[in-house]
Amino acid sequence: MLMTNVRYIAPISVLLLLCFATPAHAADATTDFALLADSGNYVWEEFRPRGTRIVEETGKQVGVGASWSNGRNPVGGGPVYRATALVFGGVGDYQGETYVSAGLPVSATTYFYGIKSEGIGGYRFGNRIGFELFSGIGFDVWNHTVKDAGATLGYSRMFAMLDGKLGAGFFMGFESWGFAVRAGTRGPLYSYQHVGIYDGVEVKTVPKPTFFGAGEFTFGSHGHDTFVLSFYFDRYRLAESDPTVVNSGGVPSGLVITTPYTKTTLMGARLALNF
Image (cartoon, rainbow, N blue to C red; front, side, top):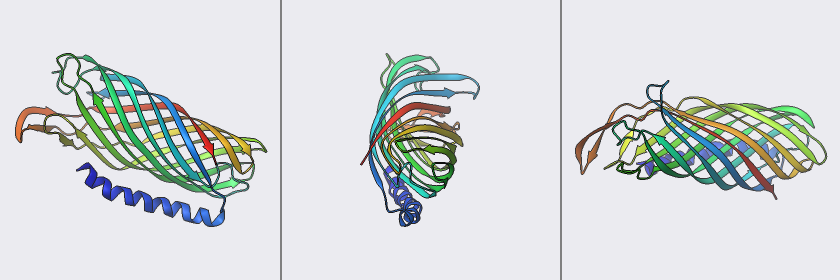
């Protein structure tokens, strides 16, 4: 089911990305290709009811990827664009309830991996000091696995999310270095969630609008950055799902699950080497 949905979403992401990139490319033929290294911490929290936390998971994640843009610090104002793809993974410490622990808290180790991609297009006002407005789309897929915790069976949850982004930024660019800060909001366009218990079950949940921000330092010549060091903050929110019956061998198992209200906060640093 997930792969069927991805087949439709991925082409839509590419088409929208091309819509952002084509006008900017015509206005500025200079492009940068960059390799990325990413490292950060995350906090995964679940609440039921919303004000009562039943799970807290903390851990670290690392990632590698690539980006393509018309320069993080282009000379003069005008259209700007950037496409980014990142593969990531990490390990966490899970403290709290699980779907199969009958409400009793457990301790477990979690593992996760996934892919993040986004396409951003906008317009920059100003030359060496100014501001920019941007919009774009992001498509994320990640798999989160809770390993066995004593007598409690492990299970996995898979997410896919397509969202729209809207934001603004302020920048300063000089001969050999620059600085920029950007922030905005993300609004959900599509979501998919699968819980791997028994036969597995697709649960219906609704992602909530949230926000993101980043500050970056650029080093290189004006109009072409050799290194970019950025620090970011990001967040996801998922509403509590409707109750769903889980089958085992095609027969109702008697287990009814409801995914709690979930909030994930990411903070980290990213280094880009431009070519």
